Length: 197
Image (cartoon, rainbow, N blue to C red; front, side, top):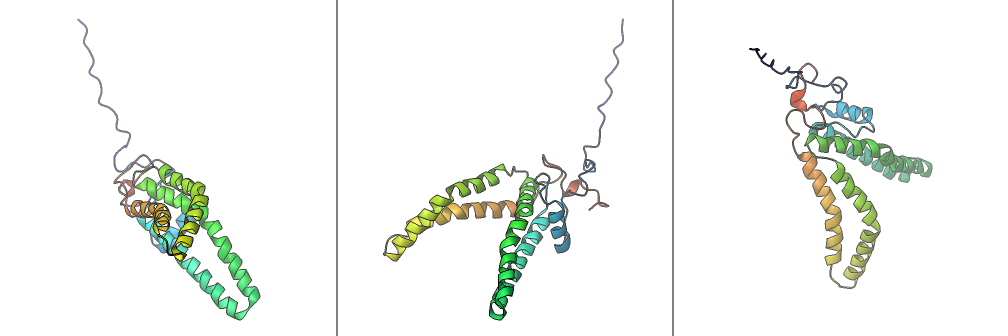
């Protein structure tokens, strides 16, 4: 008669709330202030993977708004003072959105990942709008012509609804709380030991 050996219990390799894959600790989402949010966005310049907290996203959004507002005011003041200064400020105002485009898109991708969703739908909508932009321009042009001639503004409403839907989608997703704990895209706020947060 042979005895069967019982199976040992499975080994827990740390999949609980204290587990963070090595290398993701610095990039894990966390509650941050204004300066750290801007710093993290530029340090993770083109990192589309991982997660970002609401505070990271919204503080960086405030930075973008305030910077653009500041450049716009600089252009306005410079136009009344010196033409050369106004031209330089105008160039900076035009170049700045290009410089921050990649980190803004990467941060948006990470923010969407924090909610447990794939960013593919968001970027698909952006690409779709870029492809449809000539059609939207035509719709706006037709709407303006119809409105100036006393016609219906329904075409304008349709064009605005198409563009506004992406804005509303982004707003809802970025305001949504992140999934608790780790998800497919990385560790969450609750997954980070307090000494790393």
